[in-house]
Length: 388
Image 1 (tube, helix red, strand yellow):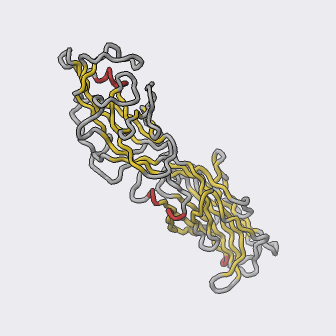
Image 2 (cartoon, rainbow, N blue to C red):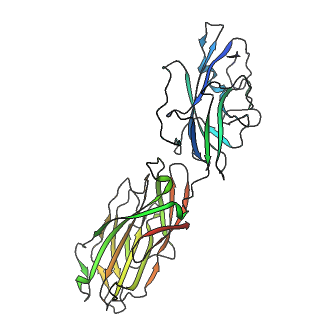
Image 3 (cartoon, rainbow, N blue to C red):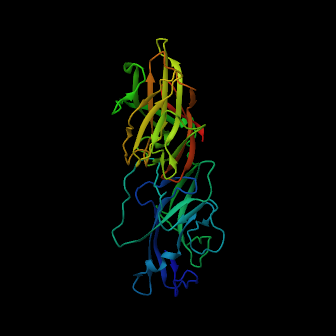
Protein backbone atom coordinates (compact mmCIF):
# COMPACT_ATOMS: atom_id res chain seq x y z
CA UNK A 1 0.00 0.00 0.00
CA UNK A 2 1.51 3.33 -1.12
CA UNK A 3 1.16 6.46 0.98
CA UNK A 4 -0.29 9.78 -0.26
CA UNK A 5 -1.59 12.89 1.38
CA UNK A 6 -3.20 16.10 0.12
CA UNK A 7 -4.26 19.46 1.42
CA UNK A 8 -5.35 20.60 -2.03
CA UNK A 9 -7.08 18.40 -4.64
CA UNK A 10 -6.69 20.90 -7.52
CA UNK A 11 -4.57 19.17 -10.19
CA UNK A 12 -2.44 22.31 -10.54
CA UNK A 13 -1.05 21.94 -6.99
CA UNK A 14 1.23 19.42 -5.28
CA UNK A 15 0.18 16.85 -2.70
CA UNK A 16 1.28 16.42 0.91
CA UNK A 17 1.62 12.65 1.41
CA UNK A 18 1.27 12.03 5.14
CA UNK A 19 -2.17 10.55 5.71
CA UNK A 20 -3.55 9.36 2.37
CA UNK A 21 -3.02 5.80 1.16
CA UNK A 22 -3.74 3.99 -2.08
CA UNK A 23 -5.70 0.97 -0.98
CA UNK A 24 -6.49 -0.46 -4.44
CA UNK A 25 -5.65 0.47 -8.04
CA UNK A 26 -6.83 -1.95 -10.78
CA UNK A 27 -7.09 -1.85 -14.58
CA UNK A 28 -9.45 -3.91 -16.74
CA UNK A 29 -12.00 -3.74 -19.52
CA UNK A 30 -15.59 -2.89 -18.53
CA UNK A 31 -17.41 -5.60 -20.46
CA UNK A 32 -15.19 -8.66 -20.53
CA UNK A 33 -12.86 -10.77 -18.41
CA UNK A 34 -10.31 -10.73 -21.25
CA UNK A 35 -7.02 -9.02 -20.47
CA UNK A 36 -6.30 -8.16 -24.10
CA UNK A 37 -8.27 -5.83 -26.40
CA UNK A 38 -7.80 -4.49 -29.92
CA UNK A 39 -7.73 -1.07 -31.57
CA UNK A 40 -7.59 -0.33 -35.27
CA UNK A 41 -4.91 2.32 -35.50
CA UNK A 42 -6.71 4.92 -37.60
CA UNK A 43 -6.64 7.67 -34.89
CA UNK A 44 -10.43 7.41 -34.43
CA UNK A 45 -11.31 3.94 -33.17
CA UNK A 46 -11.19 3.90 -29.39
CA UNK A 47 -11.85 1.35 -26.67
CA UNK A 48 -12.86 1.88 -23.03
CA UNK A 49 -10.36 0.97 -20.33
CA UNK A 50 -11.68 0.89 -16.78
CA UNK A 51 -9.75 2.00 -13.71
CA UNK A 52 -11.07 0.96 -10.30
CA UNK A 53 -9.52 2.34 -7.16
CA UNK A 54 -9.88 3.10 -3.49
CA UNK A 55 -7.98 5.87 -1.69
CA UNK A 56 -8.35 6.27 2.07
CA UNK A 57 -7.51 8.90 4.68
CA UNK A 58 -5.68 7.03 7.45
CA UNK A 59 -5.95 10.00 9.81
CA UNK A 60 -9.74 9.99 9.52
CA UNK A 61 -10.70 6.38 10.32
CA UNK A 62 -9.67 5.21 6.83
CA UNK A 63 -12.30 7.40 5.20
CA UNK A 64 -12.76 6.72 1.49
CA UNK A 65 -11.63 9.88 -0.34
CA UNK A 66 -11.39 8.32 -3.82
CA UNK A 67 -13.63 10.83 -5.58
CA UNK A 68 -11.41 13.71 -4.50
CA UNK A 69 -8.38 12.10 -6.16
CA UNK A 70 -10.03 11.06 -9.43
CA UNK A 71 -8.35 13.77 -11.49
CA UNK A 72 -4.90 12.51 -10.38
CA UNK A 73 -5.32 9.04 -11.86
CA UNK A 74 -4.15 8.30 -15.40
CA UNK A 75 -3.27 5.43 -17.70
CA UNK A 76 0.30 4.88 -18.82
CA UNK A 77 2.29 2.90 -21.38
CA UNK A 78 4.09 0.39 -19.17
CA UNK A 79 7.01 -0.38 -21.49
CA UNK A 80 7.73 3.31 -22.20
CA UNK A 81 6.81 4.38 -18.65
CA UNK A 82 5.03 7.42 -20.07
CA UNK A 83 1.55 8.71 -19.29
CA UNK A 84 -1.20 8.43 -21.88
CA UNK A 85 -2.41 12.01 -22.31
CA UNK A 86 -6.10 12.37 -21.43
CA UNK A 87 -6.73 16.10 -21.44
CA UNK A 88 -5.16 16.77 -18.04
CA UNK A 89 -2.16 19.05 -17.64
CA UNK A 90 0.80 16.67 -17.25
CA UNK A 91 4.41 17.67 -16.98
CA UNK A 92 6.93 15.63 -18.96
CA UNK A 93 6.94 13.23 -21.91
CA UNK A 94 3.68 11.45 -22.70
CA UNK A 95 3.10 8.38 -24.88
CA UNK A 96 3.86 8.91 -28.56
CA UNK A 97 1.56 6.04 -29.56
CA UNK A 98 -1.65 6.47 -27.59
CA UNK A 99 -4.00 9.16 -26.38
CA UNK A 100 -7.16 8.93 -24.27
CA UNK A 101 -10.40 10.81 -23.72
CA UNK A 102 -12.65 11.01 -20.67
CA UNK A 103 -15.80 10.15 -22.61
CA UNK A 104 -16.95 7.95 -25.53
CA UNK A 105 -17.76 9.09 -29.07
CA UNK A 106 -19.24 7.67 -32.27
CA UNK A 107 -16.17 5.49 -32.84
CA UNK A 108 -16.05 3.83 -29.41
CA UNK A 109 -16.21 0.06 -29.83
CA UNK A 110 -14.77 -2.71 -27.69
CA UNK A 111 -13.02 -5.44 -29.68
CA UNK A 112 -11.42 -8.57 -28.24
CA UNK A 113 -9.64 -11.53 -29.72
CA UNK A 114 -12.45 -13.92 -28.83
CA UNK A 115 -15.78 -13.99 -27.07
CA UNK A 116 -15.55 -14.04 -23.30
CA UNK A 117 -17.60 -13.83 -20.15
CA UNK A 118 -18.44 -10.56 -18.48
CA UNK A 119 -16.07 -9.24 -15.86
CA UNK A 120 -16.74 -10.02 -12.23
CA UNK A 121 -17.44 -6.67 -10.60
CA UNK A 122 -16.78 -5.93 -6.95
CA UNK A 123 -19.70 -5.05 -4.71
CA UNK A 124 -21.27 -1.67 -5.38
CA UNK A 125 -19.55 1.12 -3.50
CA UNK A 126 -16.40 -0.85 -2.67
CA UNK A 127 -14.31 0.77 -5.41
CA UNK A 128 -14.59 4.04 -7.30
CA UNK A 129 -14.66 3.60 -11.05
CA UNK A 130 -13.59 5.76 -13.97
CA UNK A 131 -13.31 5.14 -17.69
CA UNK A 132 -10.77 6.35 -20.22
CA UNK A 133 -11.18 5.81 -23.96
CA UNK A 134 -7.91 4.93 -25.67
CA UNK A 135 -7.00 5.45 -29.34
CA UNK A 136 -3.86 5.84 -31.43
CA UNK A 137 -2.21 9.21 -32.05
CA UNK A 138 -1.34 8.35 -35.67
CA UNK A 139 -2.06 5.65 -38.21
CA UNK A 140 -0.48 2.32 -37.32
CA UNK A 141 1.50 0.56 -40.07
CA UNK A 142 2.27 -2.75 -38.33
CA UNK A 143 0.63 -4.77 -35.59
CA UNK A 144 2.02 -4.59 -32.05
CA UNK A 145 0.93 -4.96 -28.42
CA UNK A 146 1.00 -2.23 -25.79
CA UNK A 147 0.71 -2.92 -22.06
CA UNK A 148 -1.36 -0.31 -20.23
CA UNK A 149 -1.41 0.29 -16.49
CA UNK A 150 -2.70 3.04 -14.19
CA UNK A 151 -0.90 5.41 -11.84
CA UNK A 152 -1.45 8.34 -9.52
CA UNK A 153 0.29 11.58 -10.54
CA UNK A 154 0.95 13.37 -7.24
CA UNK A 155 2.43 16.42 -8.96
CA UNK A 156 1.01 16.02 -12.47
CA UNK A 157 4.11 14.12 -13.55
CA UNK A 158 3.95 12.22 -16.85
CA UNK A 159 6.49 9.63 -15.66
CA UNK A 160 4.87 7.22 -13.16
CA UNK A 161 6.56 6.64 -9.81
CA UNK A 162 7.20 2.97 -9.12
CA UNK A 163 5.17 3.05 -5.90
CA UNK A 164 2.18 4.86 -7.35
CA UNK A 165 1.20 2.38 -10.07
CA UNK A 166 -1.42 -0.34 -10.36
CA UNK A 167 -0.42 -3.73 -9.01
CA UNK A 168 -1.69 -7.26 -8.51
CA UNK A 169 -3.35 -9.59 -11.00
CA UNK A 170 -5.20 -6.66 -12.60
CA UNK A 171 -2.33 -4.23 -12.76
CA UNK A 172 -2.57 -3.85 -16.53
CA UNK A 173 -4.28 -4.82 -19.77
CA UNK A 174 -2.85 -5.31 -23.24
CA UNK A 175 -4.11 -3.54 -26.34
CA UNK A 176 -3.23 -4.92 -29.76
CA UNK A 177 -2.74 -2.07 -32.22
CA UNK A 178 -3.83 -3.07 -35.72
CA UNK A 179 -3.28 -1.26 -39.03
CA UNK A 180 -6.42 0.42 -40.41
CA UNK A 181 -8.78 -1.77 -42.39
CA UNK A 182 -8.17 -1.49 -46.13
CA UNK A 183 -11.60 -1.72 -47.73
CA UNK A 184 -10.00 -1.28 -51.16
CA UNK A 185 -8.27 -4.69 -51.00
CA UNK A 186 -10.16 -6.94 -53.46
CA UNK A 187 -8.88 -10.09 -51.77
CA UNK A 188 -10.76 -9.28 -48.56
CA UNK A 189 -14.20 -9.20 -50.17
CA UNK A 190 -16.62 -11.98 -51.04
CA UNK A 191 -19.97 -11.63 -52.75
CA UNK A 192 -23.17 -13.40 -53.50
CA UNK A 193 -26.24 -12.84 -55.64
CA UNK A 194 -29.53 -12.71 -53.81
CA UNK A 195 -33.05 -12.47 -55.13
CA UNK A 196 -34.00 -11.69 -58.72
CA UNK A 197 -37.34 -9.90 -59.06
CA UNK A 198 -39.05 -9.53 -62.43
CA UNK A 199 -40.80 -6.19 -62.73
CA UNK A 200 -44.04 -5.48 -64.60
CA UNK A 201 -44.28 -1.75 -65.28
CA UNK A 202 -47.60 -0.30 -64.13
CA UNK A 203 -49.12 1.48 -67.08
CA UNK A 204 -47.13 -0.67 -69.47
CA UNK A 205 -44.37 0.13 -71.95
CA UNK A 206 -44.16 1.95 -75.25
CA UNK A 207 -42.72 -0.81 -77.43
CA UNK A 208 -42.90 0.83 -80.87
CA UNK A 209 -43.20 -2.46 -82.70
CA UNK A 210 -40.99 -4.56 -80.43
CA UNK A 211 -42.59 -7.87 -79.49
CA UNK A 212 -43.54 -7.66 -75.80
CA UNK A 213 -42.63 -11.32 -75.26
CA UNK A 214 -38.98 -10.50 -76.05
CA UNK A 215 -38.66 -7.85 -73.32
CA UNK A 216 -37.88 -8.64 -69.68
CA UNK A 217 -37.19 -6.19 -66.89
CA UNK A 218 -35.72 -7.28 -63.57
CA UNK A 219 -34.02 -6.20 -60.36
CA UNK A 220 -31.06 -8.16 -59.01
CA UNK A 221 -29.82 -7.98 -55.44
CA UNK A 222 -26.11 -8.40 -54.65
CA UNK A 223 -24.33 -8.50 -51.30
CA UNK A 224 -20.61 -7.90 -50.79
CA UNK A 225 -18.91 -8.55 -47.45
CA UNK A 226 -15.45 -7.69 -46.18
CA UNK A 227 -13.58 -10.35 -44.20
CA UNK A 228 -13.40 -8.11 -41.11
CA UNK A 229 -17.20 -7.85 -41.02
CA UNK A 230 -17.91 -11.59 -40.95
CA UNK A 231 -18.68 -13.93 -38.04
CA UNK A 232 -21.01 -11.54 -36.21
CA UNK A 233 -18.38 -8.79 -36.12
CA UNK A 234 -19.56 -5.61 -34.35
CA UNK A 235 -17.91 -3.55 -37.10
CA UNK A 236 -20.56 -2.13 -39.44
CA UNK A 237 -20.46 -0.28 -42.78
CA UNK A 238 -22.45 2.64 -44.13
CA UNK A 239 -22.62 3.98 -47.70
CA UNK A 240 -22.01 7.71 -48.00
CA UNK A 241 -22.61 7.96 -51.74
CA UNK A 242 -21.74 6.58 -55.17
CA UNK A 243 -20.50 7.94 -58.48
CA UNK A 244 -20.34 6.61 -62.03
CA UNK A 245 -16.90 6.87 -63.59
CA UNK A 246 -17.21 8.41 -67.04
CA UNK A 247 -20.69 9.87 -66.79
CA UNK A 248 -24.32 8.92 -66.26
CA UNK A 249 -26.83 7.06 -68.39
CA UNK A 250 -29.53 7.77 -70.94
CA UNK A 251 -31.44 4.61 -70.16
CA UNK A 252 -31.88 3.91 -66.44
CA UNK A 253 -33.40 7.07 -65.02
CA UNK A 254 -33.13 6.89 -61.22
CA UNK A 255 -35.24 9.22 -59.09
CA UNK A 256 -34.28 10.87 -56.87
CA UNK A 257 -30.63 10.74 -57.96
CA UNK A 258 -29.41 11.09 -54.39
CA UNK A 259 -29.85 12.66 -50.97
CA UNK A 260 -28.01 15.72 -49.62
CA UNK A 261 -25.53 15.58 -52.47
CA UNK A 262 -24.85 11.86 -52.01
CA UNK A 263 -25.60 10.08 -55.29
CA UNK A 264 -26.80 6.48 -55.60
CA UNK A 265 -26.04 5.59 -59.23
CA UNK A 266 -22.86 3.49 -59.41
CA UNK A 267 -22.57 2.15 -62.98
CA UNK A 268 -24.43 1.89 -66.29
CA UNK A 269 -24.30 -0.25 -69.39
CA UNK A 270 -26.04 -0.06 -72.79
CA UNK A 271 -24.79 -2.88 -75.04
CA UNK A 272 -25.60 -5.11 -77.96
CA UNK A 273 -24.45 -8.67 -77.36
CA UNK A 274 -25.21 -12.29 -78.22
CA UNK A 275 -27.42 -14.73 -76.34
CA UNK A 276 -26.24 -18.23 -75.43
CA UNK A 277 -27.99 -19.50 -78.52
CA UNK A 278 -26.04 -17.11 -80.71
CA UNK A 279 -28.84 -14.65 -81.37
CA UNK A 280 -28.35 -10.91 -81.21
CA UNK A 281 -29.93 -9.08 -78.27
CA UNK A 282 -29.83 -5.68 -76.57
CA UNK A 283 -29.20 -5.11 -72.91
CA UNK A 284 -29.43 -1.96 -70.77
CA UNK A 285 -28.56 -1.88 -67.09
CA UNK A 286 -27.89 0.39 -64.15
CA UNK A 287 -26.42 -0.36 -60.73
CA UNK A 288 -27.22 1.60 -57.59
CA UNK A 289 -25.88 1.68 -54.06
CA UNK A 290 -29.10 2.41 -52.18
CA UNK A 291 -29.15 4.70 -49.17
CA UNK A 292 -31.11 3.45 -46.20
CA UNK A 293 -33.66 6.26 -45.96
CA UNK A 294 -34.09 7.06 -49.65
CA UNK A 295 -36.79 5.25 -51.66
CA UNK A 296 -36.00 4.99 -55.38
CA UNK A 297 -37.97 4.72 -58.59
CA UNK A 298 -36.64 3.85 -62.04
CA UNK A 299 -37.92 4.61 -65.54
CA UNK A 300 -35.99 3.05 -68.45
CA UNK A 301 -35.75 4.73 -71.85
CA UNK A 302 -33.74 2.89 -74.52
CA UNK A 303 -32.96 4.45 -77.88
CA UNK A 304 -32.77 2.22 -80.95
CA UNK A 305 -30.79 2.68 -84.14
CA UNK A 306 -34.06 2.03 -86.02
CA UNK A 307 -35.86 4.80 -84.16
CA UNK A 308 -38.29 2.43 -82.42
CA UNK A 309 -37.28 3.62 -78.97
CA UNK A 310 -38.51 1.61 -76.01
CA UNK A 311 -39.70 3.27 -72.79
CA UNK A 312 -41.66 2.64 -69.61
CA UNK A 313 -44.64 4.98 -69.22
CA UNK A 314 -44.60 5.35 -65.44
CA UNK A 315 -41.74 5.30 -62.95
CA UNK A 316 -41.45 1.93 -61.23
CA UNK A 317 -40.86 1.59 -57.47
CA UNK A 318 -37.38 0.09 -57.36
CA UNK A 319 -36.16 0.36 -53.77
CA UNK A 320 -38.19 0.83 -50.58
CA UNK A 321 -36.44 2.78 -47.84
CA UNK A 322 -35.00 0.39 -45.28
CA UNK A 323 -33.02 1.64 -42.29
CA UNK A 324 -30.87 -1.52 -42.20
CA UNK A 325 -29.63 -1.34 -45.81
CA UNK A 326 -26.16 0.19 -46.25
CA UNK A 327 -26.38 1.87 -42.84
CA UNK A 328 -24.50 0.24 -39.97
CA UNK A 329 -24.70 -3.01 -41.86
CA UNK A 330 -22.36 -6.03 -42.03
CA UNK A 331 -22.78 -6.17 -45.83
CA UNK A 332 -22.67 -3.78 -48.76
CA UNK A 333 -25.89 -4.01 -50.77
CA UNK A 334 -26.00 -3.19 -54.48
CA UNK A 335 -28.99 -3.42 -56.82
CA UNK A 336 -29.02 -3.84 -60.59
CA UNK A 337 -31.87 -2.90 -62.90
CA UNK A 338 -31.68 -4.70 -66.25
CA UNK A 339 -33.84 -4.56 -69.33
CA UNK A 340 -33.14 -7.35 -71.83
CA UNK A 341 -34.55 -7.21 -75.37
CA UNK A 342 -34.25 -10.50 -77.24
CA UNK A 343 -35.21 -9.00 -80.59
CA UNK A 344 -32.53 -9.29 -83.27
CA UNK A 345 -33.87 -6.21 -85.04
CA UNK A 346 -33.48 -3.96 -82.00
CA UNK A 347 -30.06 -2.38 -81.66
CA UNK A 348 -29.09 0.07 -78.92
CA UNK A 349 -28.11 3.41 -80.41
CA UNK A 350 -24.63 4.63 -79.45
CA UNK A 351 -24.08 1.62 -77.18
CA UNK A 352 -21.80 2.67 -74.36
CA UNK A 353 -20.67 1.21 -71.05
CA UNK A 354 -19.71 2.97 -67.84
CA UNK A 355 -19.65 -0.13 -65.67
CA UNK A 356 -17.05 1.09 -63.17
CA UNK A 357 -17.89 3.37 -60.29
CA UNK A 358 -16.83 4.60 -56.88
CA UNK A 359 -18.56 4.07 -53.55
CA UNK A 360 -17.72 6.13 -50.48
CA UNK A 361 -17.80 4.01 -47.34
CA UNK A 362 -17.58 4.70 -43.63
CA UNK A 363 -17.75 2.40 -40.63
CA UNK A 364 -18.46 2.66 -36.92
CA UNK A 365 -14.78 2.70 -35.95
CA UNK A 366 -13.70 5.76 -37.91
CA UNK A 367 -12.63 4.53 -41.35
CA UNK A 368 -13.72 6.72 -44.29
CA UNK A 369 -12.64 5.31 -47.64
CA UNK A 370 -13.57 5.25 -51.33
CA UNK A 371 -13.51 1.95 -53.21
CA UNK A 372 -13.71 1.25 -56.92
CA UNK A 373 -16.26 -1.29 -58.14
CA UNK A 374 -16.72 -2.83 -61.57
CA UNK A 375 -19.96 -4.49 -62.63
CA UNK A 376 -20.19 -7.37 -65.11
CA UNK A 377 -22.37 -6.28 -68.03
CA UNK A 378 -23.68 -9.82 -68.61
CA UNK A 379 -24.05 -11.45 -65.18
CA UNK A 380 -24.55 -8.16 -63.35
CA UNK A 381 -22.16 -9.17 -60.59
CA UNK A 382 -20.22 -6.33 -58.94
CA UNK A 383 -16.75 -6.69 -57.43
CA UNK A 384 -14.30 -4.46 -55.61
CA UNK A 385 -11.19 -3.78 -57.70
CA UNK A 386 -9.24 -1.20 -55.71
CA UNK A 387 -9.12 2.27 -54.25
CA UNK A 388 -11.64 4.78 -55.52
